[in-house]
Length: 351
Image: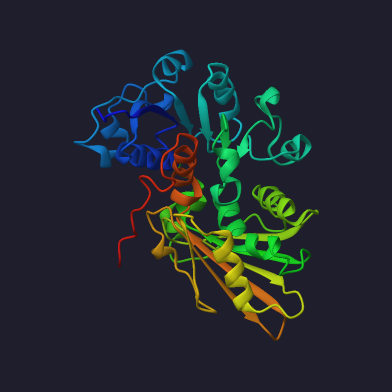
């Protein structure tokens, strides 16, 4: 047992984000894993569900039980798919437990927008009650939140790159393009034909084109908040034959006279004090997802194409860490008074 540790639970631990949560929380000096829940694998040893835990955790995976969790835990990390998460979160909140939800169920502010992209909400009475969990932009709100809606992976990378430009008034809010690439783990642990190794290895393809990806309204919501007006983007995601990582390359029309040095300065000011965001001081630097692999770090850079007048804003993250589990732990640290980077300062292995 860790001294003075906060008892926590992970719901949905058998998925990739849940496994990453379990790893980070097991290693966090201020948390004690009281429950690791996964209904489909209940009764099995953690080491059989998550083989990397062999010899470290002797617990069994259990079925979700809100009453039992409420008796033992102060916080719960919910790593279930959208739709499935909301009813579980509602049960936990009824018990007064602080919840960090990794699904899309509480990220959007407009119920009509949610319905259009995701369908009926599983806990309409709770809709809109979550605090959006991007610490670099909502740090103070997270400190007192009872429900934190942890951002999606694509919105995290896209927003971190574009936020300094939008909030600093350095670019036009019209005509923004986000071109992003993600590793296959972003599709989850369940095997599908289009994520099966022989069908995605040695190839590269876009998917959900023409403004149809469900992260589109989340990115637009983030940028609209910063701009103080409605922002529409063209967002195209791509599947890359690697396990982890997201690289978001965004394009925005620079305001007259804007320089790349101003973009870098704005980003450094916005992210000052963040334990996660690293802003390159070199114009035209190109972040690599390998720099962030397995870490909660986000590498941001800027370039200016003077021929077209467009700023090129890039951000590289690990989709399972800063894009999911690590960001949830970062929010937990803020909410429970830990140093924001506690348990998250590991560097990527190189090479």
